[in-house]
Image (cartoon, rainbow, N blue to C red; front, side):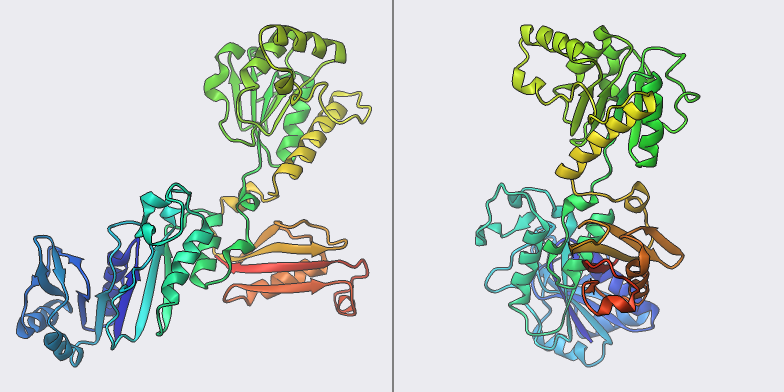
Length: 455
């Protein structure tokens, strides 16, 4: 068997993994190249047939090639390679070069595939994502890409497909560098050559961090309800008798610190949410000045219209613009005629949820985002009618159970059954608007299209 490994971002490592696999199966292995390959510690340089076979008999494998400069080898002589093809079980050929970069666009004469190749493995690497094209794509000048453009999954897929168009043998795509749930999904789509635009990055955003400035009664209810909503919660106050775990048992972080010194504990995420509910006008104003220029999804300040106006007028006199103050939600919360601290906290969170779901599509839980479980991820990619969950909703079906939900009911039940049988990326439609709905016991109508991704 002859396997040619091409592409970028981990070819040598992959070849060594294949070598170890086949040697463990008592197969003899030769590692060589059709282009240029680094001389490793055990490389035979300018070897003859007998020398190579002695090495293979001793260790089960041999890494060999003809010298090409001080550090690299090139292809073995064709006659010698043809002799070895007759007696070696597996020949692993590095058939492409990428200058150690994670991504590559092939030139006209690349890759260099041995005519007897049985299988081609195309390597790509997700470490190039979100990096400037010029820094991570070998031969980018042969493309129409903007050198300063950041690499997206679509760009990675286009680079892979540029290779596929040139090859007329079976190709296995192998993508390195997956680390979180999103990149695991991108990896699966790339490896199966399924359109990566089926998923969106914002579906995988962590739920916002909620920063509560002030630790009074409203804050305590806010923290409790934020925990139910799976919001990472940070509470800050300058009073020890309030800023403690007894008052805030569900908070992720509690900081007893002067508001003037709190910069180091404020989050940097763009979807951070700030709720200013301190004990007095002076602290409210200080907290507003500290947060108004921080990246945020939501910034609200409690207080009557008169109190808010007084604070805003003072800030405008100091040079703040009316436009930036107009983005502060004050008075805070949706107008639901709230009276009690619990009702006020509900009005605040309702306003925050409305803004979050308008600007961000994510509804994924922290448990799912941080899960390393293997299974099938089910994502709603299209919906119509009264289907209960929105586009981007997802659940993971694994051998021990299910994490999250795509709406419950018999549709979810059927999706779970389908996920357990899923072996490769697929899309299924669940149409509750026709006769098929009767088989699921549904009369409400609606339509869901679900993407299944083994991860």
